[in-house]
Length: 295
Length: 271
Image (cartoon, rainbow over all chains, first blue to last red; front, side, top):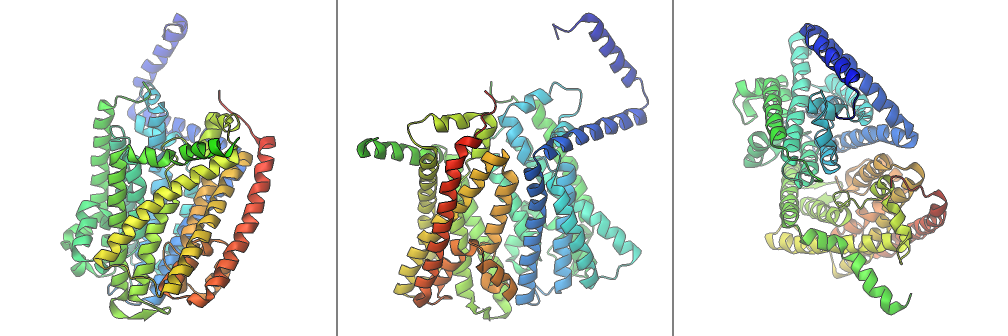
């Protein structure tokens, strides 16, 4: 910066050199420490608007509760949904919901906040700072609604586990944890891919709310109740089935009727991770070609 | 302001959203695809649910599918994306451009109402096109009777006005809270659940329907659509419309009073 005094520039350069000279684990810890400090600041800024802060927490609770109410109504009125027991259907909804809650907590600023950041020109500023842009995007706002999302999701998961036909042995519990994390990665991958597209096509925002609506509406039921072609589209077109339907199908013993080979259904959490890695690579590629808006 | 100059001005305000939408063909294509896929998937879901039964909660398969398709089309009338055009009240407050609302030769209250009217008429266009196509492909039944059709028309209009007043409340709240994203989302979700966009309220337990009956949301959609499919007899149409008009009167008085308080609360940020 031209107006910066020379002494300050040298001091800054020395600090950067010292940081780069540190072992990777120290740099990793420093990055986390800095991230947590930013989270603290964004939490304070969100809490500044008290009414909005409380209603945003309520949003998560109301939204997830409405999905539970709807799923419960459907299960009560229509028994044997796609030959699944109601407890197992609830488990599909619970795994999706917890995966979604974790996504909101860790990666929830993609895609919706990215549209605003691009439109307002903030993304261009992010390119100049010494921190990965993806991390800056995630740290740009405290995920207040994740509090409500996670609270309801944990409640539903416990309720679903007690009603499900699955025997909760240690391997099954371990697989359930992997399934939840896999679900989080699939939703994050879809959102990251949409954000990458938004760097070049502003109309992507319009598609994103619809994609999330699809995930929330159809991610909570066995896809076997839909026509086979539609189920295939929601597995290989939009990878919605990998969020919770396939892994819960494996746990509940429906592996033979999931519409995919058993090994693929079992590997759903890994598929989620791979999709996320692919979406991050696409994000990096899009970022290199990002020309910004607003001049 | 004379009546002759007021009408062209109102027309220019009302057509902002339609012109914006019509000048961006990708948005039109996206809307068409989105509506088609949404209807297709919802019809598939409900037909799948009815695979082992013919009637549930007093609704046949065709009644439920008709209700769900009409609810999906109606949602199009309701939700207009003002955010992308930076014309949401919360954005105007954030950017300071809300000041223009009080500098124009049209009252802010009237500007808001006329803009909303334009939005909803544009959405109605989509709904009518969707309705005709769905009738032609056979996923949608006609109204239960000619009387039911008339009752539905009157009730749908009253319901849409109630819906506008509820949305206006969330916008007006913004003048006090500066941000209303959370409030808008909570109201939208309550609206989706309690108005019957997710599923007809007839499927819900009695305690839930009792709760819904004391709130205005179900009168915006569930009641008109129930008249259309005949789940509420057409003879009860007047009672339903009476309740809607009661809600409309109450909400209109409240929002008119809030509009009078807004200038004292107005904070112009930015510059």
